[in-house]
Length: 256
Ligand code: PGA
Image (cartoon, rainbow, N blue to C red; front, side):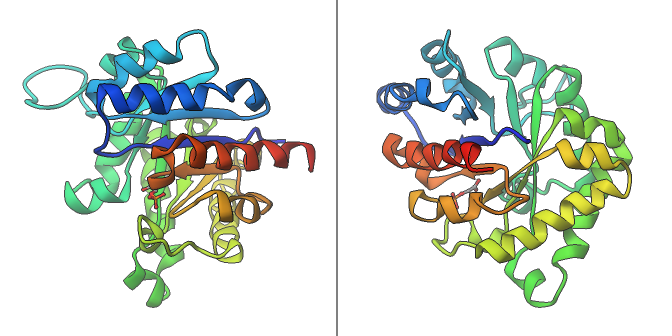
């Protein structure tokens, strides 16, 4: 069985004071979350603070992006080894906001995955289609290409050290969640794409759903066969909402 993984993507939010109360709130129930993996991804500058708060607990910490380069003249960039050095163990890569607003191509995302893996981080590789792509029946073609670039650049075995997040762009921050059936369909497709290369890697890789997941809809999404957790934006900024989703994920473990 795949261990569910719930990750908070804080995006461009946080302050020392807010982070402390949010993380303290999340930590208050971490002891009940032994059946799942839980992590939060703050903005770069807050990773040391959050890693310190989470020290000696099972709460993981990650970045929201990293450079594909290790060092050098890349003003404003953060290398994956630097993230590792300050306590991050995960890094979200290829989020649709980065693809759309910062021009990250499938090839750049693949290079970032390579650099992150080399630094010992677990990439959370985001894939997903826009509304326009869904409505023109391009969902599978888009997701296939997003995966193919990473498989071509890193090999299928690299997915043993990765998490995938399926995030339909039209569901992110919109309050419009994919139905469990819509999400399951794409999750099964993703697993099938990997299975074409290696069946056992496909079976073991964890695929999160992301896009307006909240306590009220988490259980029905997480009950789907190929949904192994959630990548949570808005609802990860309130401890009670984030924990509600974590509880729903932990509840699926006993039920399978
Ligand atoms: P959301 O964001 O939960 O606010 O829709 C998810 C994400 O972008 O990872």
